[in-house]
Amino acid sequence: MKILGITIRHYVPRGDFDQTLQALGQAGQMRPLSVHDYPLARMAIGDFGTMQLVGCDGLGGEMTEAQVLVRVDSLHELAQSLQRRGDTVLEGPQSGLEGWTMRVLHREGTVVDYLQVHA
Image (cartoon, rainbow, N blue to C red; front, side):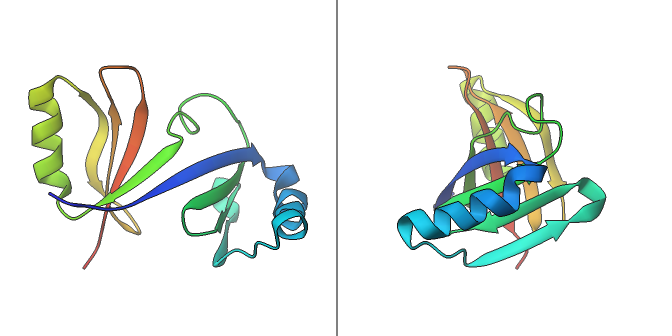
């Protein structure tokens, strides 16, 4: 199992998303690689590569538990390894739009989302 990338997530209320995206651009000359709007989920994501700005309603709770997204090449292998170590798989592995996803509560209390992109 290899780690292919790590992305940090910063959550803001959905109503503040556009203004925060603009402020990031002005403050650091940063432009997102892509911006996706998910109206049914009342969510938007600005992808800056190693950071994502996530605008969503209902901040707090389970949606914003994971502040880190780790892309891997073998999610099922990772799931087995983490469970043997004593970590808890909260969700998944399950197939989604981008690929296989899994949310894990690590023994020290950190919640991490993992993604294996569809080939």
